Structure formats: C-alpha cells, structure tokens
Image 1 (tube, one colour):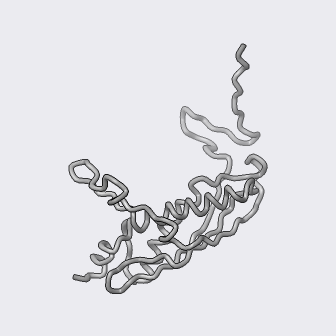
Image 2 (tube, rainbow, N blue to C red):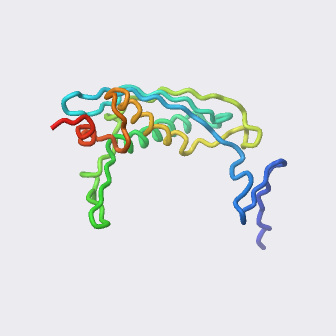
Image 3 (cartoon, helix red, strand yellow):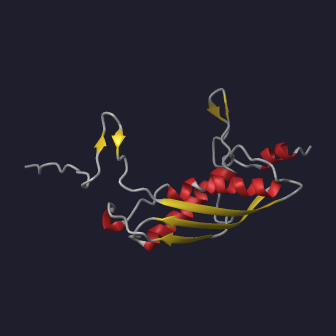
Length: 173
C-alpha cells in the first residue's frame, strides 16, 4: 500500500495564492554584498581579478564546508560570466561551440574569496537557515563591472567585460 502523500503547509502568518500569484512566494530572503578588486592593463585592457570579498546573511549555517564550496563556486561562476564567458550567435547558432572557444574560469584565473557569514536565525527556515543557492552568484558580475568602471572612469554597460569591449570603451585603436 502507498502512504498518503504529504502536503506542504505554510507556517502560520504566511500564505501563497498560486492561481493569482500573490502572497509570500518565499518565506525568507537571504542577502549578500560583494566587493571585487581588479587591475586593468592600460594597453591591452586585460582585466585581472586581484581580490574578492563577500558577506552573506544565510541565517543559521547548517554545514560550513558546503557553504565554503558554494561561496567559492558561485563567485567563480559569477566572475567568469562577468569577465570571460562570451557567447555570441550568428543566425541563431552559437559561435562558441566548445570549451576551446567558450572560456570558463579556472582556479588560476581567480584569487580566493574572503567571506563572512552574518548569522541571524531565520524563524521560518529549517534549523534557522535561509537559502544559499544563487546568492553567491548574483552579486559577483556587477561587483566586477563596478570595479572595472572605477578603474577606467567610464561606465561599463554590458557583460562580459572583455578586453575587446574595454578597448572599444576607452577608444584605443
């Protein structure tokens, strides 16, 4: 015999109307802040990430090793997206068809990420935790773009921030 299927119930004070998409879509929100330091070569406009710092409010951390891996991996993914993962298409087909021409960051491309966790227990999360998933990814790209913008004194308005784009931006021949 099959057991009765469990139905999730929102905690008291929370509700979600799935038909009208109203209410508390998420019980908790995690937050974070990222700072990226770069060196930009004035001739080639090559960008080197020289420092990465972050702080995240994840409620009560459940597993420190998993959090460390999520921070390092998410920041690497976000910084790769920001600086080197160019995906161009022609007639609807990608021009980068392999890892030979779609460049991903390696551990040699990025410095270690220095991070801190702000531990404010979540009353709604399991064991007091909040989410950690994409949190480490989403702030990395804008932090890198802001660092390059600060270094060049010109607005950076697109990603990835490749040397080719920066050469256009600063007007080199």
